[in-house]
Length: 151
Image (cartoon, rainbow, N blue to C red; front, top):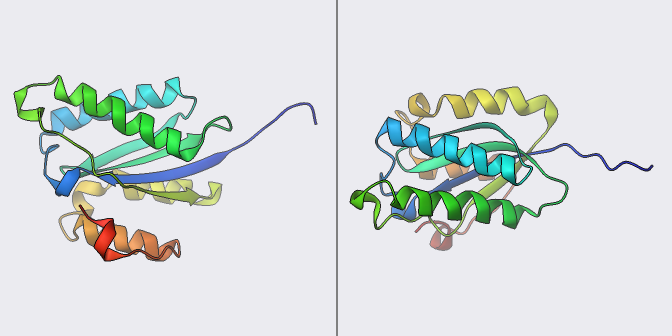
């Protein structure tokens, strides 16, 4: 076949360092998510949806066939971190957690994951980031070591 085709959808989740609520202002979150969307376009991993709450972000995107997951994560965390620090002295100490979770999403589940990500504000009135992340890992059959997954 002379043409290479792919459609790999990933759900990426990561938090602020120590889950500090750096993103409590909805306006800064909206700006940040738009900025992240631009980065994803530039690396050929267009966003399907980006959303989150004050201490973490969910990214649903297509993974470029030319990019490793680790490069996607580096791009979506590094540049937005630098950008956020330009938004005022209150962000001078901003950092993302070192780790992340990335989960494959079948095409048949994209709409359900979009709905889940879109409803983060409501969802987190009832559950913590830690409990949410544990459930995601369990659903995807990923064992986590609680000593190392939180920072």
